[in-house]
Length: 225
Image 1 (cartoon, rainbow, N blue to C red):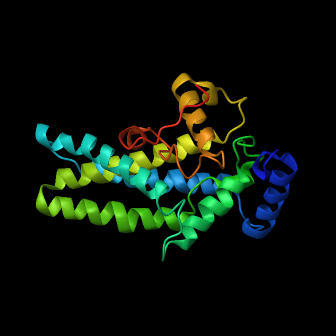
Image 2 (image 1 turned 60 degrees about the vertical axis):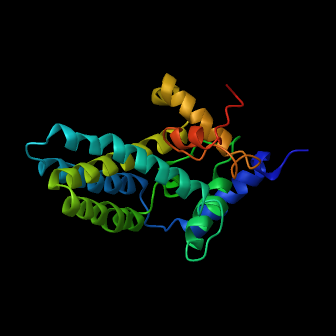
């Protein structure tokens, strides 16, 4: 029996409903894209520009931050994005109830730039990420270690976030785009497509970028490889 997620008519109907109820008439996908990468890149350049005479030990902040953010991505996705938590209901609503109905394992590509509303982080969430996560943590690290460590944490976190947005966007591009067929991207894209199967989404493939957390915690599913 075909599930609702595998029925093209059901997916099309939900997409129309989402566009009507959640995409404002004035929304422009290109501006959303420009805002995300403009603000993110500007903040990243600011962090890098503040570095001065970085010592060998301070460079360890880069791989350690990368691992930390990867695990934060994993637990944030495995937790409140797929399991409703008090105070984080909007996160669950936007991800499980909206994103996973708009994009299913048999209907992954977006149809137009207006569908970026269902892919990219909202602008307010972008500002929230920078001001309440990256900046305070960077300042805290700087106060206990060095200013270089703080700036490296901020730069690495922002670079990871932008990488997340790029990869997630590519996963939802039509297959005719060459970048979607690059070997590494293709493998990651398949992992994400498997995650969009309703039978698997609450159990497997929670890393949107690199499946470090999934490997560590036994939630990596590679059924199509």
